[in-house]
Image 1: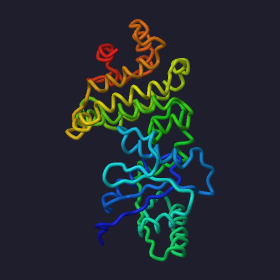
Image 2 (image 1 turned 90 degrees about the vertical axis):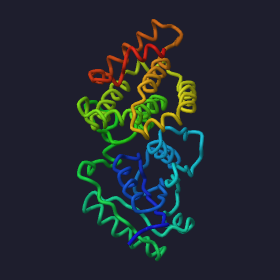
Image 3 (image 1 turned 30 degrees about the vertical axis):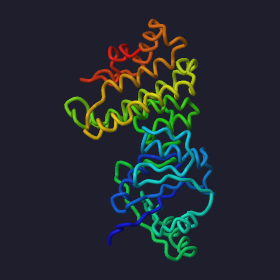
Image 4 (image 1 turned 60 degrees about the horizontal axis):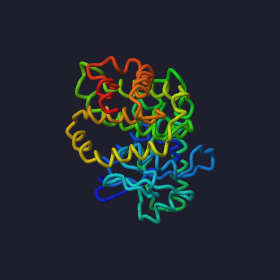
Length: 311
């Protein structure tokens, strides 16, 4: 059986969107031509983020090179993903969109029991609705939204399982910082995949996560940061480099100059006077100290000389 020409709805509270959710979406896109990701309201759960905020975080997690903050859902991410939000019934959304397939992720037998009951509830409302279940891989069985909310901001946790922007939203920290970290991660994946003698791909997220957690705990560094102005500078950078970055990443090339520019934008945002070279270097030294082992690689993730050239 194929799903050629068919769309599916992947609905959930997604509070927040996790790497486990991303796995289910990616698996669904191998079967369906399009997937509607729907940030819904679960009356049994006390949400920490609004459905619209969750939808924006989902769109950003899938594509961090777009500025989703100034747009309203539904968000069209690439050619085959639509991210939206609803406070109503998922089956009502499905009926409105003419979609007859729901996509769900299963991590345990308890998940199966709840999904089994939900399947018949949905069928009672819309008899034509069908459910496709995706089994999560062993390394993501623990990666639920509950897990993410439990460990976010905690020191010593190498795997939080969600985007840095989502972590900023939960920690009530400047969005700009999360966006920089997410972009650095997206730009660095090819480097970790192509240089096995240097670091393993799994080290990228763990290293950046450790750096991010230490950075968030250093509240004194964040005090001078103007989030709105910093985000404007980041948007200008992305507008000018988005096409070239996508091309480089499609070729699995590491855009080292762009990564240095992203770190430089972060350093400048932390300075009271970005034109003061001495202040820039002092802040860079503090950031570098927080990064720790990230610099002990063949091509440092936080290349001091390259960053200084951008300041």
